[in-house]
Amino acid sequence: MKFRSAVRRSTVIVIILAASVLLGYGYQFLCEQLEKAANPREYTDLVSKYSTEYGVPESMLHAVIFVESGYRSNTKSDDGRIGLMQIRPETMDWLNGAMHTRYEYTALYDPEINIRCGAYYLAYLYSIYGRWTPVLAAFETDVDTVTFWSLEEEYDDENGNLVRTPYDDLNVKIGAILDKAEIFRKVYS
Image (cartoon, rainbow, N blue to C red):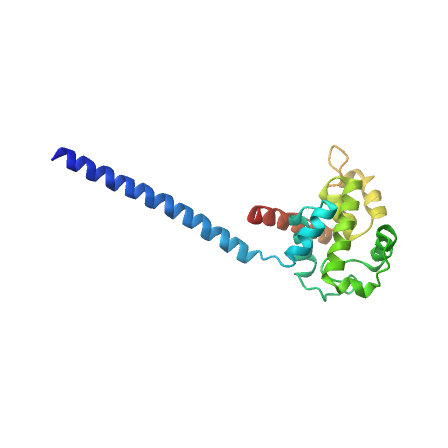
């Protein structure tokens, strides 16, 4: 009698533990699916291709595209930025020389060209700065402006690294891209 009772208790405990583990995995799976639904990605093949080609993390490319255009390739800003990654015409002029291409500005509406150019430019900027805050600041403005800000102590940390810009709206945008890159990294890794 005691033996049967002990076996029943043990069986109940094992069933409860198994159910708890299954519920835990189910909950985790559901949370991951909800995170993916809340943070969708598009153009994943192109992003993966140019991430690999230029060494820019996929999460960063997706974050820039998400924040800049919301994955809308036909977007043009009031200041003339074009496409998914909102590339400026003057940046396109520089990219044509650096990449040995002859793209017209309208080519930036093509998702593949826009992602290719944006990934190349981010990789180039990262080779200069080695940190994402100044890279994104330069992506939004230009290298000369970020170099100037880097000389101003009020925008640097104790190691002389640019940590913010003089413009709150630009700081918010950079923060949004960095935050979204971290979310994409966690959700899709």
